[in-house]
Length: 401
Image (tube, rainbow, N blue to C red; front, side, top):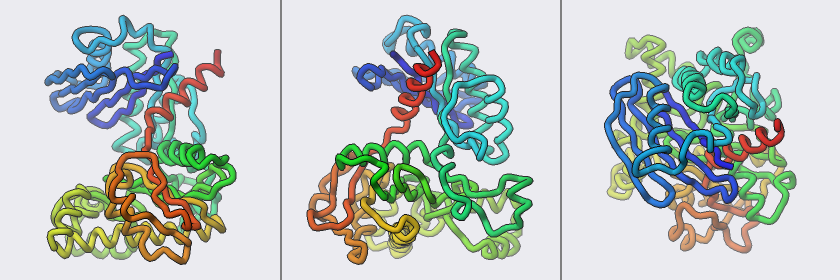
């Protein structure tokens, strides 16, 4: 069975076509600059490549190009879209409406679009992509939506509620939702397999670290708390996002800089984090290099990131009343030995010890980096959200036959 996985952004359409017989990637690509020109890059599993500027006024044209790339020319991997058994979509925000993946209907597309206010950069483009997809795939080809927030719907109220008047929760759904749930669900399951244990028997702190980062407490395979909140702005310091900040500091800066609420949001989401503190850039690799070269502000932001992750590990160990494993995933988590080593330094109280030589020698590989006498296991676990979306899609399609 072949499944197409789609991840739509406001001006992009990333895709992967997977063969679920062996879970291998047949083809993948990205249609970007939708609405502002258009560009596409694509690659087949056997290494054939295609890249070109295109005209993508909307997501529909991007989908049409996707079909063309998959079915014709040098990057052809299927004869027609009828060979695709289903399409799985990543959806960022499902709020408290969706706590599991589901088969797409017109009503569900409308509900996803109605949540756009909670994720304005993501949910409306998701809805556009779902409608555009319907126009180019066979009518009998099912679509499935997998929500980033669904995994965190197991959080108890004490973890997801804010100390605001209760009516803003009742009337406007203001609460912690958490994000990266698809990734956290995938890597915690993969870690359990690697450890030879049932995920239901494990207490895990999952550190998804990239340009956007979130830390999640996974107790018995369920999310019980997570660092991102109402939006992906909360939590640890990130590429261009501030992470958690005293709300009074925000209103103070807003007045001092004479910023509107939307400008302040832009300031916190796009001009802060690694970029704002270091002055070097938003990419951790550039910040780390600058820190190694003696840039004090770059070193400061690196220290902040490590310190904040350590605090989350400590607090989540308390929340779960125990800790069996810490895992690192995402672009930074999988590839930055400096961040991993920093986080695992001075954590003896928790029984965390890593093999520094091994840690410095590996990247992007499923491997245990803790020492044999470490009471808590520490792992690198590469994430694969597309594969999890494909697995969910396959399961739902089979269940509905």
